[in-house]
Length: 131
Image (cartoon, rainbow, N blue to C red; front, top):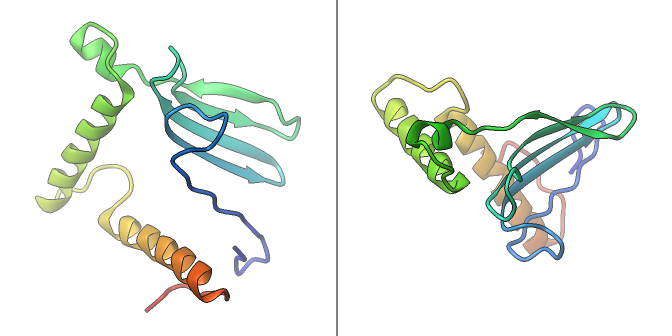
């Protein structure tokens, strides 16, 4: 990816990446640090948010245990994740947006995914926005 600012990026998505725990993981690397968010039930404590500074060392800054605490036992990450997605969707439909990504953000994300697919199929750069 090339951004208007001149920055570049790489996107990778896959269901069977060797060495990765099953679940969701997003990593963003920049010139001044990095962020990693992981949702996984492969190992206890494997979900959370880690931040690395210029030294390159990741430090955990957030581990969400709200679902586990509310039912008195550890729940799989996908239970909390799914229930929050549904609650946010209902709030958006009712006109009370949640304090996070909006429907418009989701549309923009889909545009990026569609551009990636088109770029792969057509073997050329695709400019955003698509419309």
